[in-house]
Length: 226
Ligand SMILES: CC(C)(COP(=O)(O)OP(=O)(O)OC[C@H]1O[C@@H](n2cnc3c(N)ncnc32)[C@H](O)[C@@H]1OP(=O)(O)O)[C@@H](O)C(=O)NCCC(=O)NCCS
Image 1 (cartoon, rainbow, N blue to C red):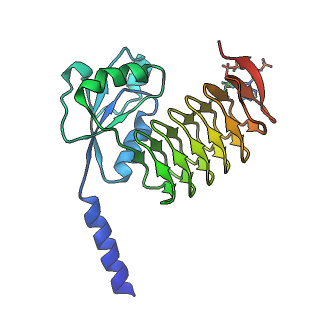
Image 2: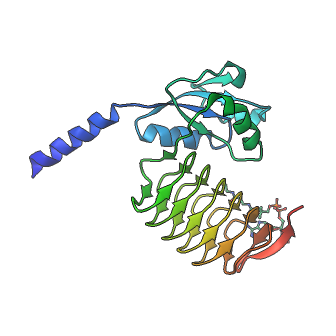
Image 3: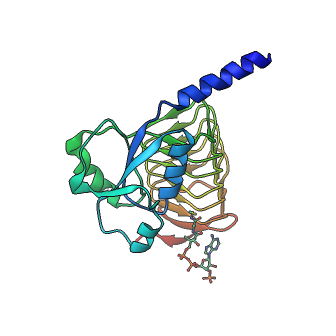
């Protein structure tokens, strides 16, 4: 038995020597999470690509030992690609990148659990200790933060982001461009429309069909979307 486990661990280490190199478009407060998740898989980040005016405070929080290049200097290579920020400017950037015909990959932290019975699109981030249960469908460019749980048969659209510790229970249907504050809970079988923001710690107990900000337990609409 002992011999087998030694062989397995050697195989594992060898597979980790096949490193991928990543180029991350955009700088954000998530940059270290992205770096950490990539490195957890034995891969490395080659460049962060700066494409717009970025708050200098954010630049200070970006890993300083990794080269930052301007979008104008970007040339496609064999790297894997990821969009490393989550706001409305993502569309502009994607339009600018169309000419390169890039394929965006998922970044899944080594410490996350993603059921092989789930379906994951592209450009998603899944952080450490996140759990994606069987039969989940996750679209594209979602950011599933550390310690989040997505329950079985839940369908999540595109460009949703969660704070750490969010629980989205089973059989939910979540549309696009939503933001879930840290540690909020969505009880089973709920439907959430697009452009919804849920405050930290909220517990959502009813479907949401109207865009806006919802907070509290049970969560209530406190601000309609302008
Ligand atoms: C809900 C939220 C978006 C409101 O932000 P804001 O518009 O700046 O609101 P303010 O901080 O000015 O607070 C406005 C009111 O809402 C209350 N409030 C703020 N956040 C709340 C929350 N999560 N739950 C309940 N009430 C909340 C405030 O106490 C304040 O109440 P008052 O008017 O009675 O004094 C924000 O507080 C929040 O929860 N964001 C989620 C952040 C997060 O988890 N990010 C994840 C990445 S780490």
